[in-house]
Image 1 (cartoon, rainbow over the protein chains, first blue to last red):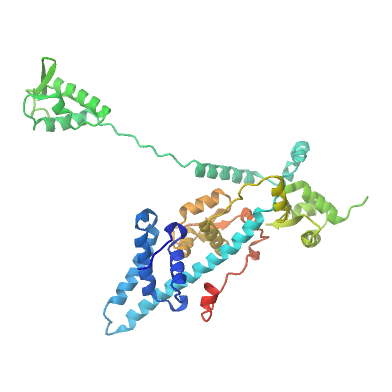
Image 2: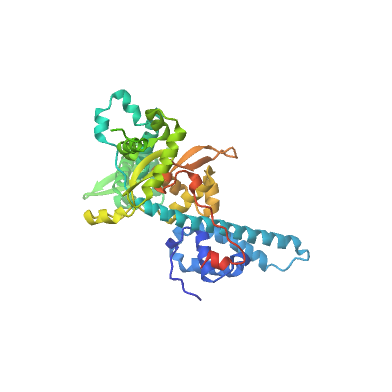
Length: 247
Length: 181
C-alpha cells in the first residue's frame, strides 16, 4: 500500500491525476502499463473517499478504466484478433488523450508566465480631460458604436448574473384544509372513541400544520363527520353521524 | 518645431491611454497610408524595448498602447504596497489554452480534452470577458462555439493568436526526459 499525501483538489481533472500517477510510478507514457495505472488510480480514489462529491468526474473515467481491465481479465478468445484490437484501441485512445492533455497542461504553464509578467505592467486610462472637452460628435473617437454598447451591457449583465447567482428559495407548501380533512377522516377511523385533541395532532410538526388541522377539525365538525364535547376544560371527539357517508 | 512622425504617433498613443488606438485611426489622423504607419509602429515597438525606456509599446488585436515595463513593478511596489495580483487557476488556464489553440470550439470538445465538465468555467471566463460565444456549430444539436477575446490577447501580451507558442511535441525515445524531468 502506498500512501497518498495529495488530495483531489490538487488536480484539475482525472487526466491530470493520471499524469501525476504515471510520473509518480515512473511509467512510460508511450508503453503504458494500464493495469498499474488503474490500480493506482483506484487506490487514490479510495484514499479520498470522503471527497466523493467532487470525485464524480473521476468516477466516470474510472468506469472506462475498469471496463478496460475487466476485458483484459477475461480468458483469451480463441479468435483473439478482435479482442486485441479493441484493447489496443482503448489503450491508444487513453494514451492519445493523455498526451494531448499534457500538451495543454504544459502550454498553460507557459501562458501563465506570460500572464504573470503582463500583470506587472500597468497602463494609464485615457485622458479624462480630453473626454470632457471633446465635442459630442468627436465622441466616436473613443471608438465605440451601438454594438460596443450592447456588448458592454451584455458583459455587465453576465457579470451581474455571475456575481449574483439566481436565488433558490425553499418554501413550505402548506397543506390545504380539504387535503388535511381527507387525511383526518382516515386517521380517526383508527382511533378509539372518545379521542382527545392530542390524539388528532400527533403527526403535527409545525405551526402551520397545527392551524390547518384545527381548521380541518372545524370543517369536519360542520359536515357532521366529527363531533366534540367539552368536559372539565378537556375536549373529547367522536366520529359524527355522517362519518363514512360523506364522500 | 516640427515633430517627427514617430513623435506624433507617440503623443497620440500616450493621450489615448489604455483604450488604445487603431492603425486605421492613426492613418486617418495623419493622412498617411496604413502600410507606412505600421512600419513605423513596428520600429517603435522595437525602439521602446531598449533599456532607455521605462514603458513599452504593445499591440493587441490592432490596438496600440503604452504599458510600463515589468521591471518597473518592483520599484512601484517600494512606493505603494501592491496587493497580490490577479491569478488564473490551473483549470482556467487550461480551458483558455484549449480555446485559444482550437477555436472556434464547442464546450463538449473542450471537455473531451480536459476530461472534466467546464460549464461553470466557461461562464466564469465569459464574465471576465476572456472568452465569448461566436455562433453555433453545424453539428448535431448546433452547440455554441467559443473563442477568446481581445482582452485575452492583451492579458497574455499577444498581438494575435499567431503569436501563440507552438504546442510541445513529445518523442517516444526520450519521452521520460521530455515529459517528466
